[in-house]
Image (cartoon, rainbow, N blue to C red; front, side, top):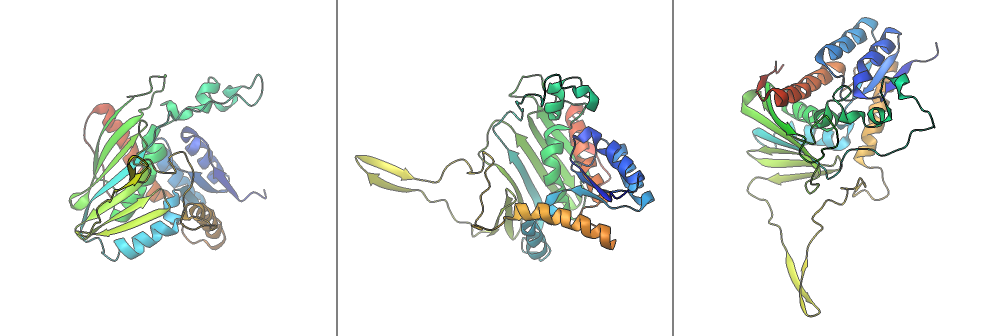
Length: 322
């Protein structure tokens, strides 16, 4: 009876059942992204939150990242990019995405959680019954951000996807390329690959007046159109022959390490998670709405689910775009 709120950080397929159960029991809910595994499940969560008058926040931390907020308020809203017709969303890694761990105890039974064996529990992201793959686990973050900056949801999507590299029994693609069409002739492309980490993760917004790059949730770059600087490679002589002085070709955080110019201070990424939880608690106390409520998250989920269905059908799918 003393429990006021629940944080759901379980596999995607279980989000709706747990969230609706908690909301119907009178608890406030902070649920990890993606919101749910189907549009119907998302709508059930929205309806339950409204009916029970409870806070339902979905964990898209970019909404709470000071860097993203500054970029939106001071660059996008101020029109510094001019007319923005194209966004590039990239999340590239060079890894299997597969976990290798032993069960927590001998004789451990994954069946109690609805899984046939330890492999399906541990690597649930690989299997269609439980997961929507890269589009949900990674892409939904960036599609949500693009829809925020474009101030609209996608109107249509077409996708190419395949299990290109890892023929290990997984059921979800390890390479996916989606094109989202927005109102006003705007487009966002998303690519996620598991064979090269050179580009890492970033969102790039290209306008008639400039380009904004948001990288790894901790770095932001703004370039005025026509004033971009060329890359410079200096050659010096050390010993008998020439030596090229150049930066590392791979991003330093490709292995998961966090890079920040704020030495000794907390990064925007860390603050985003804190702000997300803080706003959730504040909304419970004050009744004020959260920035990333279920209505917004539902639109992102619908777009990402449609991207996967478009890949399966090899067709362009239209969305409401509202």
